Image (cartoon, rainbow, N blue to C red; front, side):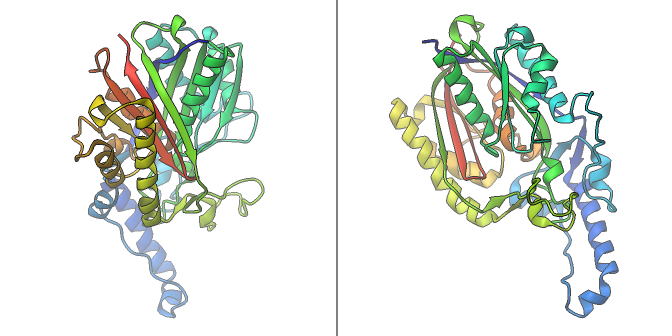
Length: 373
């Protein structure tokens, strides 16, 4: 049985960034327009007036300061308030596959691999562009892989679920090299006219190469153990789909976009994830002092701070639990992989860390790793 390892990661960041100040200016202008257009109904008590947002409110609520998006103009246009992403003809690569390929090429290059050496491709993400054909198969074609490919969606935990799936393929002998990509165009599923959530998400793509140890480069990461957990909850939901989409644009159908009950999510997810991490550490014989770093899902600074404190036994430093949320915002499945990609270069042989994601479902996944060489 082959031992699975992580040999490389890749990251694609869209060129367009939106600061909180820019987002707030656009949102507040939309609010003024909405209140003026509905002044009669508001005065009659038929509708409630919309309230302004602020930079201070966003940063206190989330820790987010900016986000990258595939289309900035459409998001900030007060007459649109949603990204304007042109549909492509079927003979062109899709937007989701394109950004996944960009991240994949970087991971392959860092691992000294060619796409033809990839046996399996997994596209693991929250925000899928279509039902079929699978984006993973499109990525497979674009990189020149001859194996098999499929999509999987476990919301914000998709990457850790994808890593365990890829590792299982390696252990079972079904593949030697598995490419797992996380293209997330979260802005397309976000209600930019909702004060409580208009700031949460950003767009990005990440990639992880999982390989059998005997074919991986020496500079790799041993996978010490993985664990997955799901527990049904309605507190984070997106109902958009071909069976219940209502208005195809989703406009006016707020439950067809991202919706959540943030306070309930915080209260329920923090103990669930912290307990799951501790149980897996006990199973693997690891202590908090064995972990140099936690690469946690980037959803909310308060959640990460509390989870890290419960795991480590003290308030984590930025080095122990790095943040990319401030510049990337919540990028769903890609968040923990961005943190790992950007904040793992200083690890030496024997150093250990944890990649952990959690989100809608509820779902959560842990991947404990150790630097090999």
